[in-house]
Length: 246
Picture 1 (cartoon, rainbow, N blue to C red):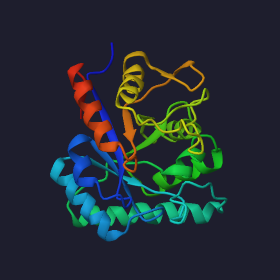
Picture 2: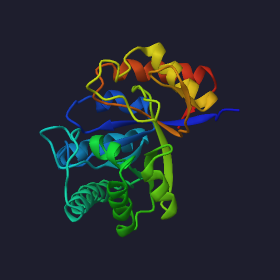
Picture 3: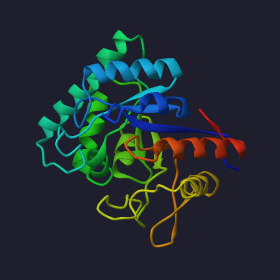
């Protein structure tokens, strides 16, 4: 029996400017906090919108690389990466305090997210930041990932995440954005992709295999040009199946 409710999240504050349109369609958001995009002015604006729509707020730290939008792997010393991620999260927390809002979760961005999924060193840094800041919040992580295992061992609460608008390889890594079939833009394809994960606990990979996966939250990228249409259709179709977005 599949769950009666799921969370849908989106990456916001990244300079696209569509936050007001996305907020009514999602239940949690990941706010860029200066690493790959965003500044304090943008963070204030997005936090206010999230509060208005009662959307849960997450920090979206990245490698400090605005030039490449945080999507290129970086070989940073452990201390430097730890300090960068911690500073990004603290910046958002300070703004949340000013706006009388609370932090719900942390979700790494781009290359940091992908590397933490399979690289023990990067995953450990992310978990150590969570521990050092004593954050009583969830870490959004991929199923069957290195960061999920390390977080569980360190008693950091996790939420398994899947991507509604991305194709998967057989090892549950995301298809590289260098490939034409990396991003899903068809509304029907996105619904079938998400509904299979919810109802069967499986994802169909680019080779046609159905691989086991778990997810309590699903991400639509805010910078996907079709994001608004995809979310509208996904929300309506899931609700018609009795699955609430919350």
